Image 1 (spheres, rainbow, N blue to C red):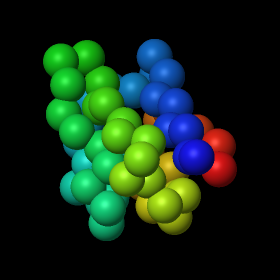
Image 2 (cartoon, rainbow, N blue to C red):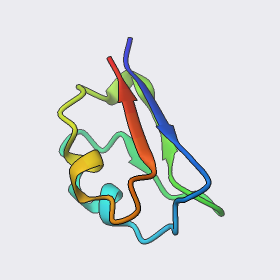
Image 3 (cartoon, helix red, strand yellow):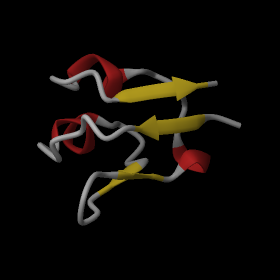
Length: 58
């Protein structure tokens, strides 16, 4: 199972949400919420995050 970790550096810009082809990231009050079961570990979210706040463990 894939685990998506979004840390406190997240600015909630939404770039990762807009980029995720699997719709595995959802808006939440402080930072996006990851639905790990949907994640295919494509790393698109990691690549677009401007503050390097996302880690994907496959």
